[in-house]
Structures are given as C-alpha cells and as structure tokens.
Amino acid sequence: MARMHSRRRGKSGSHKPYMESQPEWVEFDSNQVEERVVKLAKEGKATAEIGIILRDQYGIPSAKQSTKKKILEILEGNKLTPKIPEDLMNLLKKAMNLREHLSTNKKDLHNQRALRLIEAKVKRLAKYYVNEKKLPESWKYTPERAKLLVG
Image (tube, rainbow, N blue to C red; front, side, top):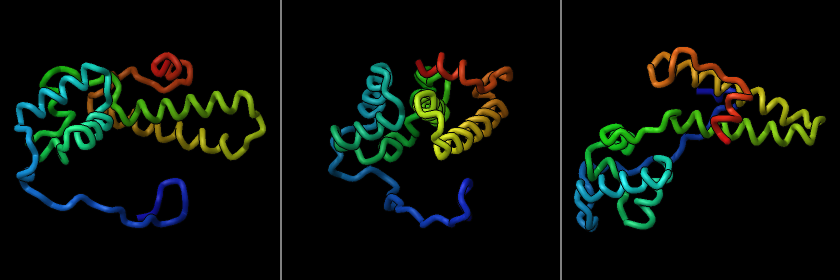
C-alpha cells in the first residue's frame, strides 16, 4: 500500500517473533509486571516509554505475553489512562515545535508544508477518537488549544 503523503511504497518492517507465552528466563510473574506498569504510569511515563523501560531495565520482552493484556488495558483497569491518547499528543507536540520553528524562519517552505501535513494527520486522528468516544464531541484542533495541552 502506498504512503499517505508521498507517492512511494514503503518497505515492510520487521516483526517480533511469534510466542504464545513468556520465555522461561523472565523472572517476573503477571502481577509483578502489572505493578511495575502502574508504578511507571504514576511517575508520568507514556505507554511506549513503559514498554521500553520494561524491556531494557527489567528484562521483560513483552508485557502482553506475561499479563495477557496490553499496557493500555492495564492502565484502563487502574484508571490511569491519559486524557488525550498518546499518538495524538505526540503529533500535537510535533506541530507545536514546528510552529515555533516557523515563527523564526518564515521562509522555510518545506517545513510549512510539513506543518500542513502534520495538522491534517491531527485532524484525521482527532476525528477518529471523537467517533470512538475517546475524546469529547466538542474537541477541535486549534494551535492555541494545542499549545495549552502540550505546554
């Protein structure tokens, strides 16, 4: 399938090897993994950061293999989900950084186009989350609102 904002087709990415259960060398059981996830979420870490910390510091290759739940499902069970989904927040941060850059570099045409593409992605993703009831119906993207949310 072709990429969204270019006319090229992408290369296939790598995939994790298929495993039904966690390996024998993992020292933590499912309750301990869930406790670590909740602890890291209370420290303000995002779900992607939690997964990386579990992998690198605790030697847990996949939280889903050990707990049979995704990290976000564990957070939903403990009522620790963020108000704005992580992927939307990352796009908002990217758009705000690009707006700051364009305020000092007004003739940067390449990044003006990049900002339009990012904002189009934000609007599409926000529309999806409104339809999925993860954002309120009245949620609209504006640069001022994004600055308040990110800042």
